[in-house]
Image 1 (spheres, rainbow, N blue to C red):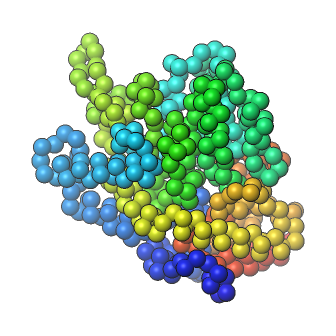
Image 2: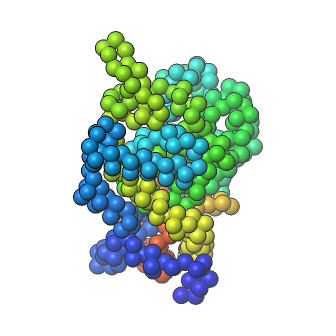
Image 3: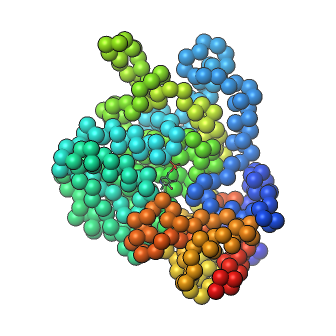
Length: 412
Ligand SMILES: *Cc1c(COP(=O)(O)O)cnc(C)c1O
């Protein structure tokens, strides 16, 4: 492939050998996995970490004096430090292990109930995932705060001048995703945070879709909160991270009560444990946390700059090829976007295209992508979404584009 010679010196075939699932066939064809924005695939190094945990040192953490418990505790806390270093938090206890992005957002939303008063304003962007809309609606209902929306334009970019008009001393909290899962838009979160802070508002950044592609630096961004899920960055499901500035984590009340999160308990009064344990009630996903650390090691070894450069070439190549198809409409053409292509073909239903692609062994997502307001903006019920990862190839894109053409012929 001539495209591959243009690509960065990226040994994609070698990398693909790390992912056992990429060898399998689906409906008689070698799998083409283009649903990475929903969940990423898992390399052998992460799978081995999970097998090693259950084979060699499975034990409950932070309480046992015995060897296995101490080993598991050490590995779990080392994983927290890996997450801390990766996102560049000042302290490791500013990293709370969660069950995923949704959990992290709900933890913050619940904690903010005591901080908000009737008439306070909270801002959310027009391109959020449902998990970064619904918890804030619930919070607004509970507190009487007013939820306002930062609008976007036809290209799928937030309108910054409208944001400047919306933000004021009444604004207490702002929620915005770093990257939109429906459109791939990279949002100017650093600028948003800077203006928010000038007005005294805190910002939670939903990094679920950014984390697989961009190495976010929470200190550089000056984010108050940053959340992500391991399963979108080569880790297992059921584990994620919440970064919070120490001052906020100390201020917010615990989300759940239980074991691990207490200092002392009597029937009259309980005092809470220090960070991060205050927010980690009960036995956590120990193996998941350790495997999350292994996933970060794996991706960092390849290098996030290398990953981003290669994925960008995949994105450009696929965009050009898809645009050659008659009736093709791509949603989300922001100047800065990650390797996500949301599209429709005139007169065809996205679900039908997705179903036919699956028959050819090609996995894409169809529907509203948990972002119904984005679909409403474009006045469509949904899209077909192809999202790429660093283990995808130009050949797979050729097969995908041929598949879309074939589906179009069959459906018209
Ligand atoms: C996937 C995703 C979420 C939800 O993540 P979970 O792992 O399901 O909790 C939230 N926001 C964005 C932008 C996402 O892509």
